[in-house]
Length: 483
Image 1 (spheres, rainbow, N blue to C red):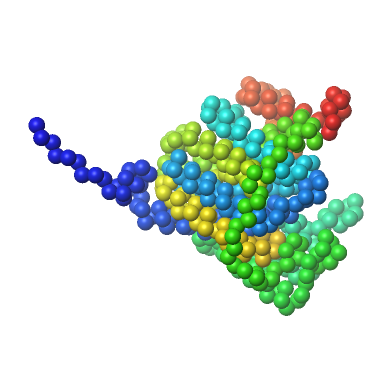
Image 2: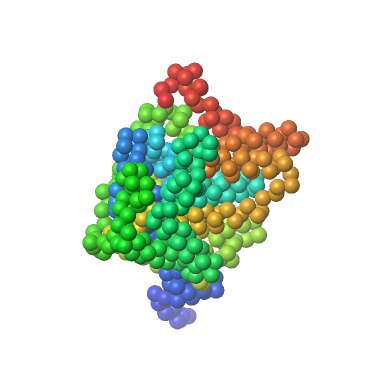
């Protein structure tokens, strides 16, 4: 019996079969457009991440270079986005997570060096990979009540916004016991940089409100042009650590001497695990725990929302290749630490590309390739003043705060733990403190309100861990552990 040989499939057919483009109701053109829109929507991270990370000195006074951070941010985002597209085959792009990079810059490097902080990020990533591979990640996620999950996102949003206000000089320390902070300088927004922040905030806010694709990036670019003009006219100069309170906080916006340059990747591999010796094993472990927790819930919540938006989630919220996706997300944290760009995680801005039609990992290949190309344009990022980036932080914080509508305020045993989670983060300048206060309050109030059986044993363990975290100073002294 003679059989007719099957004609070899074309490249386009193989591409369609691998990514399931037709099966998900998409097209190659739709994937390309979606990938492009996702890049435009999140390209601001190449500017914002170096501003956040390079603006803080570590415990020894060392700082990360702005251009170097911009280059490794683009590199890591490109590589991880492409990897996730090929493995999970979903249109979820990766980049340095804002909550985690702010935590590193504000809370961690005051205790350790930048290399040691990135070592903690690597350990955090390895733990997440292990949790994902064994299935424990899903178990832990399910143990935390939805109200606390929402509160963590809301609290991080408020914290990020507060950082933006402080970086812009809109909120400043008064130097007095009461009130500890105030509006601008002596109650007045009287400086050119802060005025540029206000203009940038309103301009970007209008773009977001009108649902303009790439609103954050457009707002940053337009506001930077305004800042360059303002500096050329008013000659404000740098603040020089407060000597010139009316000056620009970090970088003075001037026209760049070059646009394209070879990326400086000198931060690759600048990782140390000496933080355990510097601050003690207990304190270092609690920092790792906070990183794992923040990374853990932010990523899983984002992926759940995006999969529903893309129409690939089932009734339980699970999506194709779930375990592989969670493992790759953990690898993103390892890669971010190894490149000193902070943990790389799924970005909610991927929803912009999904809205444009992206349904598969092919869109990620487009987004990732554009991030790799962006490495060669990092000289442009150095002209963006922190006051402009601060406006983007406030916008992102606002978007994260929007989930507060889903919190149940009518039951006080829920309301107080949620409230503490949200407000303790910005008031103490620590994500860890907010999460810990909320978890401990939840266990105490819910159990003493007759709802102890509703609390997962894992949540009791986490709350106990935070009790140790808050009491680590006296505990270390009692045990004779160097801090």
